[in-house]
Length: 582
Image 1: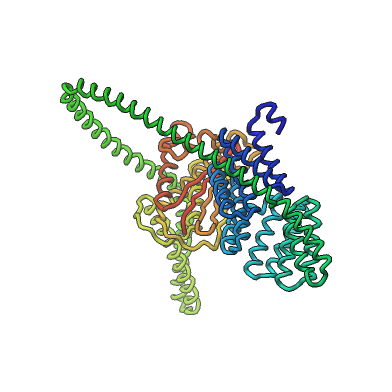
Image 2 (image 1 turned 120 degrees about the vertical axis):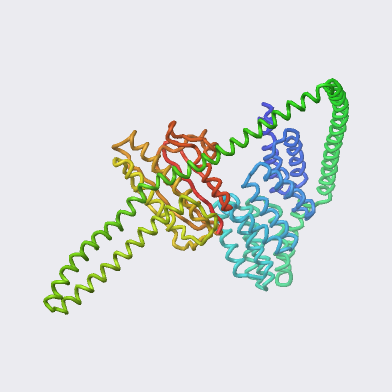
C-alpha cells in the first residue's frame, strides 16, 4: 500500500487496502476492516475501477454478515454482483452467488441458500482457493434440510481440500459447523472432539469468529457434564465476542457507516447538480438550435417546391434502382443455387453409374440365361429350366433394386435444385453422409489429381429432425465443398508433408443438434472472420467464388431458428458448425 501511494498507483492502492481490510476481518477487527474497505471503495469509485469496486462491495458484505446485519449484507452483495456482471467477471459472479448462499444460510433459509449455491457451484469448484468453502456451504444446506449423510460427505470433502490448501480459516469454520450438527443430533462426544479441532484451526488462523463459534459450542456441550471446562470455554467465547462485537467496535462501525452514507449522499448530490447543469446547457443549446433551424426554414421556404420536385425525381430513381437490385439479387441467388447444383452433378453421375452398371450387367446375364433356358426347354429338361428361371427372377429383383436406387438419386438431385419449403422429419446423419460422398466424388470427377481423406463421426442417438432437407442439404454441401477446396489449396503448396483431411460429425448437446464440418487446410485470417457471412465476401481468388454461398447458408440456418458458427486459426484449419434446436 505504501509503495502504491509513493508512485501514485491508485489501482494498486485500492487492491492493497482491500486485502488489508480482509486481513483485519480475519483477525476479528471489524471496525478497521470496514474503515479500510470504505476507503478502498472511494478510490475505486472515483476512478471507476469496476473489478476493485466489486471486491470492495464483496468484503463490506462479509463484515455486515459477521455483524448479522443481513439486509446490508445482501445489499452490498447485489452491488458486487452487478459490477461483476458489467465486466463479465465469471469468477466474481460465481463467488457472489456463493456469498448469497452463505448469507441465506446464516438467515436459516435453506431453499434460497440451495438455489444460489447451485448457481455458483459448477464454476467455483474449479477454483482451488475457494473450493473448501464451497463444500462447507453445500454441507450446511444439507444440515438445514435434515440430510446428515450428505452433509457429512460434503464436510469431509471440504476438510480434505482445506488441509491440502492449508486453509485453516475454512477448516475452523467447517469443523465448527460439523460440531453443531453433532450437537443437534445428540452426539455430544463427537461434537466436543470436532469443536476442539475447530478451535485449533481457528487459533492457527487467528480467526476470531471461528473461535467464538467453537468455544460457545463447547461451553454448551460441557454445561452439565463438566462445569469447569464449560466455564473455561465460556470465557474464551466471551473474549472473542468482545473483540468482535464490543460496544466500542459497534460505535466505530456506526460512525464509519454514517460517514459512508454521507459520502454517498454527496455523490448523489453531485450527480443531481451535474444533471441539472446538463438540463440548463441542453435548454440553452436547444433554444440556439431552434433559432438556427427557424432561420434556415424561413430562408428555404421559397425553394421548397423546387426541392420537393427534386426529391420526387430522386425517389423515383431510387425505387427503380431498388427494383433492379432486387432482380439482380434474385438472379445471383439462383446462380448460386445452380452453381451448387453443378458441383453436385459430377458426384451424382458417379453415384448413378454404380446402379446402372449393375442393371447393365444383370440384363446381359439374363439374356444369356434365357438362351440357355430355351435350349433346355427343347431338351425337355424341366428341372434345369426351373433353376434357370429362378436365377433370372433373382437377377430381375437386383435390376429392380438398383433401378430404384438410380431413381432415388435423380429425385434427390431434382429436390436439391428446387426447395419445397416444407419441413419434414429428416435423418440428419444420412443427409450429412450423402452430401459428403456427393461432394467428394464431384470434385474427383472434375479434377482427377484431387485426393483427400474424409472422416465421419455421427451420433446415433439423434432422432429425425423437422427441417427442409433440400435447404439444409445445400448448406451442408456448401460447407463440405469449402472444406475440400481449403485442403486442396494447402496440398498444392505443401504436397509431400501434408495429408488433407475433412471431418464431418454430428452431436447432440441437450436441446441442440450440432453438425460440424472441420478441415486442416489454410484456415481463415482473423481479420476476415467478422465478414465471413457477409454477401459477396470471399477469400477465394477472383473468378473462383461468388461470395454468396456462406451468406445464403447463414440465412437458411437462421430460418431454421439455428446458428451457423465458425472457429478458425490461420494456417491450421477451420471448423464450421450448424446448431439446430431439437
